Amino acid sequence: MPANPPPPIPTSARTLLCVHTALALLMTQVPPLFPPVLPAWRAPLWYAIALVTGILTALVTVRPRTPRAVLLGLGWLQVLLALVNGFLVGDIAALLLASWLAVSALALLAGQLRKNPRKALVAAHVVSSAAWVGIGVVFVALSAVALTATDLHTVHVTYELMEKFDQTLLPWANVATTLTGIALGMTTKWGLIRYRWVAIKLGISIGILVAAFSFLHDAVVTAVEQSEQLMRTGGTVAQIGANADVVLWGFTTALFSLVAALLLSLYKPGGKTRRGRRQAARPTRQASAARA
Image (cartoon, rainbow, N blue to C red; front, side, top):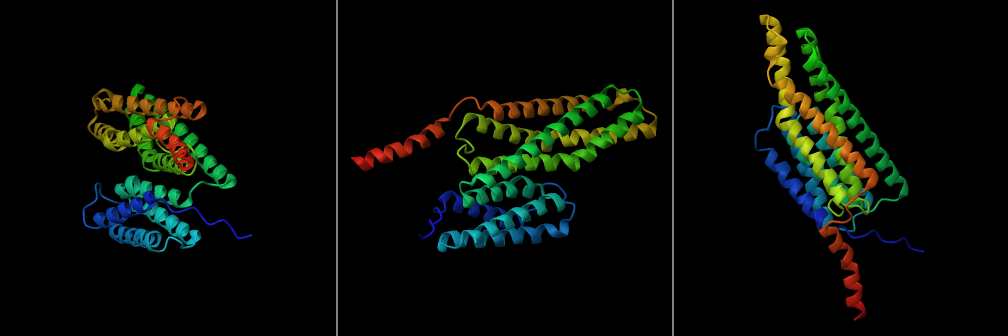
């Protein structure tokens, strides 16, 4: 008996790949948002991303019957290049934009997952989510220690430790949770905006990312610099200013948001969104039209 043909590649996959290719080419010409760690590697990696996504776009458009293993291999390659550019090179655009586009396109190419791959993806999402919550608890505890300590050296060491975690552990947990969540939504029945609880979880992840890169990271870095300067000049803890409050309440809000996202995953409240209801009703309307 011949094997069932693979499902057709959705048009949205082609659209995402085109957007990703255009973004990669644009990033080769514009300066980075923040200074990268390895600036010499930034442009070559963006060109490599543009090449891979361009090839993928051409294959799914001109030769849609290309073996799915080839398409998925190229899809994984674009994800890997985006993550290398984001984490090792330090390009924020690659971390926040290219990786999301790459994972979304890969998920659309993969389609609905079978049981074992789906379980593996769920496990990865659960582990990364738990790590993110745990790191959030550590950040809140360290923020409280720094805010209540009376010894300036203790305050400085605490903020230095937070800065190290903010540059190492936290981004990995944040990005891993978000990307596995996107992949899980797009390769299962839940979707990304088909159910209210999934859409709210996605909004929480985006909100925390925006807060982290807009002011929380800067607040931690400023607190480190202020405490170091006060140690040199013989200042006091009270002179650190409002950054201590911003760090504490910012990470506390993020932690409660993560706990809320965890509870949403457990209880799945709210039902379908308007878009989800329209998608569910579409096959029924098509079947009725076919019978007529």
